[in-house]
Structures are given as structure tokens and as C-alpha cells.
Image 1 (cartoon, rainbow, N blue to C red):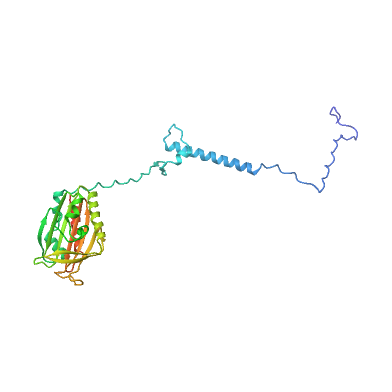
Image 2: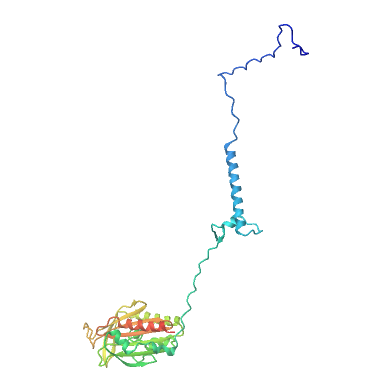
Length: 306
């Protein structure tokens, strides 16, 4: 076609555009095009971490707002983690109740000084302690036991319950005592006493004073008049049985003789209950823990009193 759109009438051909030469060969043959450069992996890692932190913070804020009922005040994540309550599955906060410590019971009411006689054991009760059919009450009183004694003054508390020299300096408010034994005498019997104080602290101090004197008089020999004649004794070692301090007195008349009705062994016992000191002496040919048992039983009566 000529420029006007008419075909040529000769054998001329339509001129063609020149073909560009092939690209120059690179040494080593053809190489595939290089892939596009990837962004550094560390950059993507930090992007992912930042996105995760944003999601976590957003979740915590949503939980705090939902549990506080839509409070307008700002609550941070650190504040929510210090709350003592836990969240149930329904999203309702469950507050743990702190444990409460019960207050100690109030101190027992002091026993009235004029009530102490009622705590002493009766003759049938003492007979039960000795496992004998009967014993009798020989004397009683509401004053300390007095009188001179050949026993050293500092050791008289080791021999007689409620002794005047033992208790006069202690500020007691009331005393009751009984002597219970058999008739005719066989050396079996009890001297029991209770001594009242203004409060438990004063009673405890008086008991400790007596026990300290006992400790200073362990393993000593002394003489006491019994039935109008001298009787030799030897003290043992202070012990403690269930809160009751005890001291054995071994008969030495004649020395080495077995315990008999004329030659009994004895056991001293002392304890404190409320504002009352319980002081007892139990003697007999086969004495075991009669002094301890009498003191323990009296203390139980004092503890149970209103």
C-alpha cells in the first residue's frame, strides 16, 4: 500500500523495521534475573513484637474496664495485676476473704478468798486416791500452819503445806487447809491446802518462790517431830509431772528401813490454777503419787469453778 492506501503494482515489499542485535553475552553464560531484595528479618521481628504488645495492652485494658463496671477513671495494667481478687469464667470478680485470727479468751475470773475451802478434797475423795475403804478428817483451818520447827527456815516449805513462814511474805488473800488420815493412825494421810491471791500473776510468783526453795533444799537431811518423837527425813530431787512440781521425802528412821506405818515416805506437790496455789503432802507406807494426785484433783476443781 502506498501512503494513500493503494496497493503497489510492482513487486516492491513493505519496508520492515530493523531487528535489534541480540544482547551481548555475559561471561559464564546467561544468568537469571536477581530476585527482588527482601527486607531484613530483624526488622520484621520487631514489627511483630510491637504488634503483639499492642494487642496484649489492649486486652488488659478491655478486661480492666469490664471488671470495674465501666469506671471513667484510668486503670493501668500494673494496677490490675495487684488486685487480690480472681476472675471466674463468667468474668465476675471473686474476692478472696482474708483469714481472721480469733482473739485469745479473756482471763478467768479470780476465785474469791472465802470460796477456797470448797476446793479441798473430802475424806471419801482422799480415801479413793489411796484405794482404801475410808479415811477421816482430823482437822481443818483458814490460817497457815505455824509453830516452831527444827527444820531450817529456808526448807520448811519442803515439809509442810501452807506453812506460815512460807506464805506470810507473799501477800495472799485467803487460805484453807485440811488434814485427812486413818484412825488408828498408820502413817497414811494427806495435808491439803489452797492459798488465794489477788490474781493469777501473784499466785504464779508465790508458787515459783516455793519451788525455788525446794531446789535449794534437794538431797538434804532434816529432823521433824512426829507423835512426840523426832523423825529423820531426807529430801529427793524436784520434778514436774503434768504441770505439778513434786518432791519426795524419804524416811530415815531408822536409816534404810522400809516404809511402814511408823516409817512412811511422803510426796510434796504444788501447782497453780487461776489465782490459787494448790499445796499438798501425801504420806503412807506405800506412797506413790498420792501427793501429786490430790494436788491435781484440787486444781481441776479450781479450773471448773465459775
